[in-house]
Image (tube, rainbow, N blue to C red):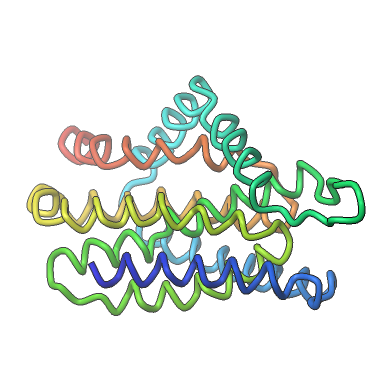
Length: 239
C-alpha cells in the first residue's frame, strides 16, 4: 500500500502548492510547461499503443465503452460533481464580489485530462499490479513524482480542486493492488498488451485535448478499459 498512499499524497501536495503558486506563475510559463506535459502524455500514449497485440478488440472496446459512457452521461456527471467541488476550493476575495475568472471549457478540459493522467495512466495501472504481486513499489513512486509536478501546473490554472482526484486514484490503485493476485493468473500477455494499447489511445486523446487540438470525450472513453481484456481473449480464441 506504500505506492498508492505516496502517489495520493503527491497529488494533494502538488495541488496545494500549485494553488498557492498560481498568482506567481505567469500564464505563459504555465502554458509552456503544460505543452511539455502534453508532449510527454502523447509520448506515453504512443509507447503504450505500440505494445498492443491486436487492434480490432482495442477499437471495439473503445467504441463500446464510449457508447456506454455517453449513454449514461459519464463525463457530464463527473464534471457536475467537479464544478460543485470547485465551488468549495476556489479562492474568494473578502472585499470584492466573487467573479468566475476561469471559463467552463478550460476547467472541463483540464479536469478531464487530470482525471485520465492521475487515475488511469498505464504507469499507475502497471505499478499497482506490480506492487500487488511483488511488493515492489518503485513504479508508483516514480508516478508520484510526476503527478506532483503535474498537479502543481494544473492546480495553478484551475485551483486546488484537482486534489480531490487523489481519492478516486487511491481507490483504483488499491483495488488493482489487492486484485492483482486474483486477476493476473487469468490474464494472458496478449490481453495485457491490448489493455495497454487501449490505455495508450486514451492517453493520446488526453494529450491532444490538453493541447486544445481535439475535444474527445475522454472520461466517456474510460469504460472501454473494462471491455478490452474480454474482447481480446475472445479475439485470440476465435481468430
